[in-house]
Image (cartoon, rainbow, N blue to C red; front, side, top):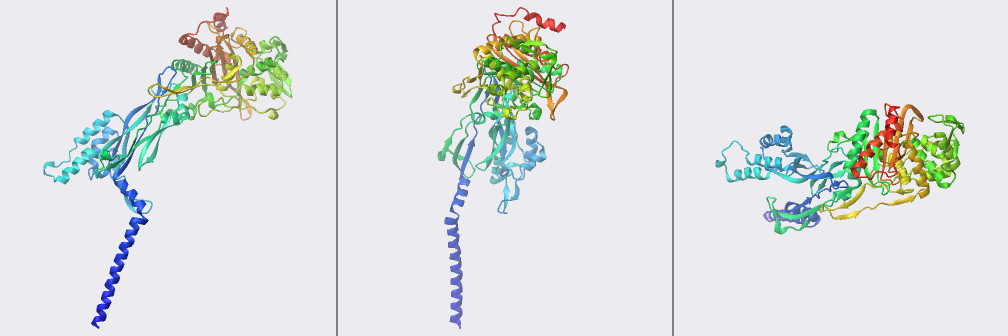
Length: 624
């Protein structure tokens, strides 16, 4: 009996030992084989660290090298809550005034929290890393480190044990640390804001930590995000138990490549001239919005682009849908400025001459069941006179002579119904319906700027082609990309798109457009003292809900000077102005103000063929 009990006990012991060794064997297989990759990765995380090194975002400069947007070095203040123990209230009390944070909220951030992870296990959140404040200057950071160094804990530290003294020393020296960061700054405030754009700060998790990245949201900041942002660097290294880097065991060290500087064609002085003139007009006529553009017609370079109301990118709360860049985003019926398309096309095709006469029916012309009107009861007008007086009926009759397909082809060749290719986001195509979608009256309405919708930039684009011997130049807003040391990485050259009309037709159009800024034209107030101006007025009634809204107009003047050797082409457009609405009357003077100040700043030589009555035109018209 005794032997049987001993045998059973021995077998039981053997089974227990076999089970224990089997469990140990399974555990070893689990750790060394089944979970090898997972545990190796965790082991590396305990000793290996990867540090992300942010590149500096490139600057945005004007044509003369003046800074429009730049990045300023600041610090991100972070903490290791595991080193603070129960002293969160004390640390928060010392730091809250310096970091401009709520003391209770700061204490909460410094306290590790127990949460459940994806597997449902309870873990400590933010044990070693938590962000406290961003955009902190070096001066403030020095104050923070001084405050931590001088922390007192209300105990006689001389009587503390070695471990307790070490804890307090780690708290003072390592509980708070900073990370390099950058702040986007716009030194000129709202100047050229819609061209430059604005950024936001996005966060992404890299190596278990959140890192901040500046991302463009509009304008050049968005359009050239890749070039401005640069390439991040990184450092992979080993650390000791105190998380200090062991430089000798550093595996990788790749330095970041800073973003490129973007040099614009915009000239801040010209931009300021335009913004000042438009601000005065905004106060005088209180339009819903007002825009202005200055372009070199020979190259397509944009020296100024303004849309008001605007915003200050330093103050995100000033950015609203109303502050969008209406120069490229909004489409409107152009009104009489579109007459340059039909008249130049007809001249180019040889279906009319400048001296051809048209009966304008004393202001009432019935066509295809509609009656077209003029702002005055004109009788016989020449082709040139139709431009001078801006006759809708005359333009309609020229359009009928040119024909539907001819009118459409010239409108398309001038760039309407398609984007100009300007490297800014949000540019609209405008509306130019194919001929098959035209109504019977379209051939008479489109020549006067109805039934077609354009952007402000497209309309200036077309006028600049007439000023440039008929050549359409691609609009330029970016001149070049360069490194911080000034070395050029990429230069953008002016680009011809196509020749829409011949040199001879261009000269005929210029002669006709010169008459607009005279006492006989629709914009005598646009005449300059020392330069001959060529241009065209526009006064388009706004369409709302499928019909034209009474009392609501889009008024404009687009012109260039000196007329026979154009240096600048300028557009001024007001949406729903008060105190007058005729384009020549309210936009002409703004054009003249901008043009004369730009001519002085850019040292444009006076026109040798100055019209003798140009200086007196403004005085005479003002008296009337």
